[in-house]
Length: 362
Image (cartoon, rainbow, N blue to C red; front, side):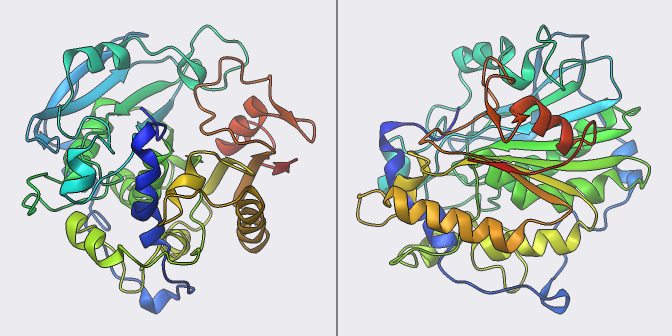
């Protein structure tokens, strides 16, 4: 479900290559991506997903496929509030025969098995826990997007030399209108993702905002354990191979995760973006290296600090714990972690505008 597999250290290059080049994005450097500018007519017309109150319902989406060509869908769960949480699942990444054939990304070779659907449709942890009084999302509706393409939910390449369909971006383009049609009365939408899914949220945030196409619907983004850091040494080794393999739709100068983030910020003025992370993320530090040796905790913390110091503003806040932890959204008690007097539940509430939107760090 998240980037925590033993083989995940080799995803290193997947993220690292995308952070291989540094540079800021200007408005003139942006180009429309697939999904930008699409109107609400396309959202209003077409099939919907079944939604049941407080119950998970998994539905395959016609045309959406996993890396192995098998079907993939969306799990919905209807709430009583007017907010919809669209959640992008994490689970590693792959881009060639070595990485895709050796289990570096979840579900790529197996597809969404019955056992995986059972895990998804019985999910009641962390932000999905309707019984927790301290969960700001307890009464919200959910659309859960599984991960089975190994491409950070961004790929558009159905034909690769290694036989894997990296079509996560195409899949989400099919799913998104169906999701929005299925929850027509929402007044708020949160796009959230964990690890690989967090980077997927980064790739797809503008597309969601464009598809909503309603200034009266409040939009916010939550990136969990998916910080778009600038490059570490040797980070350009696999850039060309990965971009060719995944074929994500990018702006002209979006050559790495940081520039992708900066471009997204230009396209989402006034949108609150919250990011949860740790100073020594034990999983991501394996990913951001090309030699199998994790980035040192000190080097990681320095990079995190530099990124935060240069990007935090009124619309971007961070929750940073001093630990090696990877992933927060499944925490059993969202009030157990408190930093600078701000609990994780408080931070989440701030991201969606239910309380003060403030940063906290240890």
